[in-house]
Image (spheres, rainbow, N blue to C red):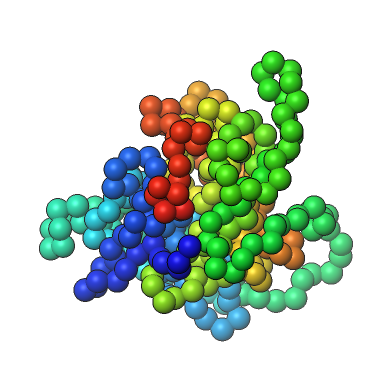
Length: 289
């Protein structure tokens, strides 16, 4: 697959490419594209010596579409150990020069790096993560799933790493290993932007069940103890609960060396537009649903 990007830059705004399209509906953008754009804007506005991004939270107010898009970054706090950048994502459904619509708002917290305090604390072991080997120029995600038991009491075998997304449709815990696309052409995603882009799949992996994905997330929070050291980032579903059409899903984020942080999403029932991966092929929307 040739390297492309979620957006192109045109006369002061971003234009979504086909790689940014989702499977939820015509002209709608996928979550990774919107989150990546906001994370890139925050990182460009927030760097300072000794600081690194530790938490990214985005509220997705409404479905973003294939309309002209802009971002506005604001320094909300400039402290000795904490810097906070707010980013608003605007779209122009009636064209540039008309009233914009705010489709998302993110807050990124940058923390001052320092040595760890003394003492020993529990931490999840890094030995349980075994990502697959994938060619450098292959941007299509790989998926895997744990064994589970179906509604009839039958054991459904675990699924090893595969690019066949339909094979993962079931109730088993899922994981993903992916190389995030650039936000704009000719610019490799930074480790922070790559982590945020991958983490948006916390919703996909947590809310994907035996009939497809029928929840749509309205937010994403990414917490990072460190930035990924590899260009690929893994996402492993770690917790999911749902009730009355509302779900909460949390994932562990990791790179080739082990865990780096978590992704957390809340989601709402969207069963009327449920995506059944046994009948809809994501590659028809250029790999990044």
